[in-house]
Image (cartoon, rainbow, N blue to C red; front, side, top):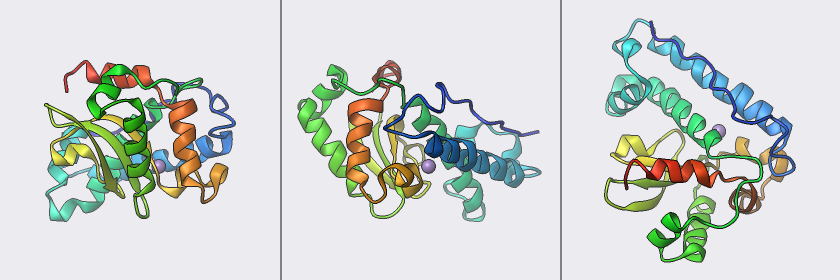
Length: 197
Ligand code: MN
């Protein structure tokens, strides 16, 4: 039977401070993600989704009018697990050439990504994703995810208020800067690029 368990963090809860506090990680990873996992397990039980892997649940439920709750929780499980893998202690720094070159240079990438992430109205996500040929910066609202649009995630930033409010209050732009300057796990991003653009 379908049953996901909590995805472990790849680092200690205190390892991203002061850019992301223990309180934020405890709440965001320990409570929000855990709740999405529990909800998905409960909702998928005894449905056709119960035997599917997570990516198949997301793609199938995205077009199923009767499975909106399953989609929202499944997509949020994927989004969060992927986002937490995009974070690392002592991260950030120089934008890798593979990303910079795709966007006309490191500064242009940073500007475009920051503008996209800052421009998400309400809750959502900023991404670098690929359609198989080209890297693109995209945003999604609420739980929505690139996979539901035929895209594959390369980099994710959660810009729901729960991702930054304890540490930055309303200063989302400061959180985006801290992500790019101190937390983003470029090694993980480069690994994702190895599957092709
Ligand atoms: Mn979140």
